[in-house]
Image (cartoon, helix red, strand yellow):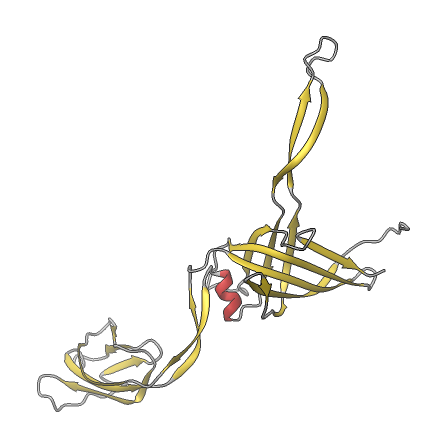
Amino acid sequence: MDYKDTGLIFAGNIYMAPIVDGLATDFAGPINVSRLEMTPPQPESVDRTSFQRDTYGQVLDSVNLPGEAPRMAMDFDSLPSGLLADALAGTSEAYTSSVQSVTGEAVTLAEGVWQKLPYPNVDVSTITVTLESDGTTVLTRGTDYEVESASGLIRALSANGAAAVTIDFDTVETSGQKIRGATEISKKRQIIMDGKNLVTGKNATVTIFSASFSATQALDLMAREFITGTLEGTMTTPEGKGSPYEILMQE
């Protein structure tokens, strides 16, 4: 191989897939990754020390044995539901919330504090709040009470609304992704980088065959900057492979 002095700065599209029963399927990506860090195996040095008269204390032989396994870390700010779940050590699943009808829900409203209705996603066009004392007086939304539709919270806005009431309402149908946080601590993933060396313009591919990840950083959901997820873990060599990862660089 001819030696040619070149630098290396990678740009790349990152794809990641869960490994199930030894197979990587359903790659997500391209993921915007700001750090893809690989740490070589940390060796354990074993030395043979001289106790002889003329060389006492000197090292006669030394060998590095395998110690801590190779590790990797990844920072990313692409956060659709699946990757957000990864960053929160959780899982994601599709959900659908059908329309619910509530009649005669008894609640005591007060000014300054919220009460939680039995369902979120209230259809405010259907809500009726009636004083329990006479069973006929209907309160006015926006004057006597207010409702936070998405969270299903209600509170009084006036002394007239601060009373025991009964509430009728329907919900609206919703669907999306549900993230269950802190439910999957260890995640086995395969990662592919379709990259390019910006110095030479040549293409390169990085394949991490198997890594056991965990989310390691706190996520500030109210941050004033784009939220970044972090996964760190150990790279392993799967059956049929001679290394935990490969880098193919075109010349």
